[in-house]
Image (cartoon, rainbow, N blue to C red; front, top):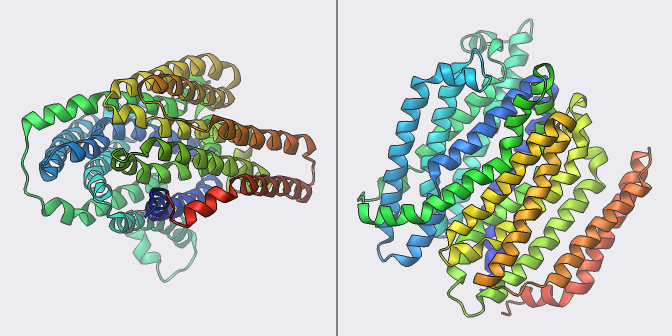
Amino acid sequence: MNPLKKLASQTAIYGLPTIVGRLLNYFLTPLYTYNYSTEDFGVVTSAYAYVSFLLVFLTYGMETTLFKFSQSENDKQRVYTTAFISVFISSASFIVLASAFSNSISESIKFTGHPEYVTWFAIIIATDALAAIPFAKLREQAKAKRFAIIKTINIAINIGLNLFFIVFCKSVYDADESIFKGFINLFYKPEIGIGYIFISNLIASIVTLLLLFPEIYKSTYVFDSVLWKKMMQYALPLLVAGMAGMINETLDRVLLIHLLPENEALSQTGIYGACYKVSIIMTIFIQTFRFAAEPFFFSQSKEKDAKKTYAIIMKYFVIICSIIFLGTMANIDWIKFFVGEDYRAGLGVVPILLLANLFLGIFINQSIWYKLTGQTHYGALLTIFGAIITVSLNLYWIPRIGYMGSAWATLICYASMMIASYFIGNKHYPVNYDLKRILGYLGLSLTLYVIYVLFKSEMVVINLLIGNVLLLAFIAFIWKIEKKHFIKMASNEN
C-alpha cells in the first residue's frame, strides 16, 4: 500500500475512537457549563491540569521508547515486559504515596475539604499510566482495531456514567415521585457534585485496564536491568520534554488559580477551561494523527524515500489544520452555544489557541528528526525553551490581562518551538519541506479569517454565510492546486 494511504488508513482507525470520544467529551462541556458554576468548573479544569502533568511523569517516555527499542532490539517481548514492570512499580508506589498524604496534598492544590479527590485521581493516573504500555504494544503491532475498540469502550463508560450521575440521578433525586427514587437514594448524594465527573473517569480507567488483561496476561515477564538502563537513557530526555510540554499545555490553568485574585481565580479558570474546550477541535485531529504517525514514522525511516514522505505528510497536515482553523472560526456563532452563557466572555481565546495548536502540530511532525537520530535531548531542550517562554509570559501577563495572557503565551511558545526545531533539525536531519506551499496555505487561511472579522456583523446568518463561503473558497483553491497530488495518492502510486 502507498505509505501515505497506509498512514491515512491507520489514522482513521486510531482516530475513530479518539475523534468520537473527544467530540462526545466536547458535548459534555455544555452538560458541565450549564449545570455547574464557573467556580466548580474551575476546580475540574485545574484538577485535569494536574492529571496531565502526573500522567506524563508516570509514563516517563516509555511509549516512544517501546517503539524505538522494538525496532532496534531482537527480543520485542523482553522490551515490552521490561517497560511494563518498570511502569507497574512506579504506578503502585504513586498510589500509596498519594493516598497517604491526600489531606496535605488537597490543601496545597486548593481542593480544601476534598482529600478523596486526591486518592481518586491517584488511581486514575496510575491505571492510565499502566494501560499506556499495552496500548503502545497494540500500536507497535499495528493492531489498530483492538486499540480502537478498547478506547471506544473507555469513552462510552466515562460518558455514560457522566450522563447517569449528572442527568439521570439528579433528575430522579429532585423529582417528587419516581419508580427509581428508592434505588437512586441508596448511593446518590447531591453534595458530591462535580465529584461524579471524577468518579466516572475512575471507573472507566479501571475497566480499561481490565480489558487490556489479555495483553498483560499473555506475556512471560522478564525484567532486563541492562536493557532497562538503556531504555531509561533514551526515555529520560523524553520525560523532561514531556513535563516541559505539559507546562506549555496546562500550566496556565494552574497559574490562573494562584496569580488571579482569590475571589475570581476559580471562575476565570473555569471560563478559560471551557473556551479551551472549544478550541480542542484542532487538538482532536493532532492527537489522532499522532497515534498513527509516531510508529509509522519509525517504520518508514528504513525506506529510501522516507524524507520525501515526511515532507508530503507535513504539507497535507498543514492543509487539514488550516481548514479546521478556518472552519471553526467561520462557525463560531453557533459553536459558542456549546458553553453556558456565563462562559462565553472567554471566546476571544479560541482563534489564538487554534493557531497555537496548529503550530504545536507542526512541531510534533518535525520532532521525528531527533527521535530517529536518537538525539532526544534536543526534544527536551526545545520543550524546555518553550516552557521558559510559557512561564515567563504567564507570570507577566496573567496579573495584567488574565486568561488572554495565557492564550497569547501559548501561541508564542508553540510558534517559537516550531521555528527553533525547524532550523536545528535542518542541521541534523534535513527534510525538504515545501515551505512555499505550506506558508502560502497557512497565510491564506489567516488572510481569509481577517476578511471574515472585518465583515462580521450583528446578524448571525450573515456571519455564517460569509464565513462558510470563505471556507469553501479556501478548500476549492487547495483542490485546484493539489488535485494532481490527491489523485496520484488515491491511485496507490508512490
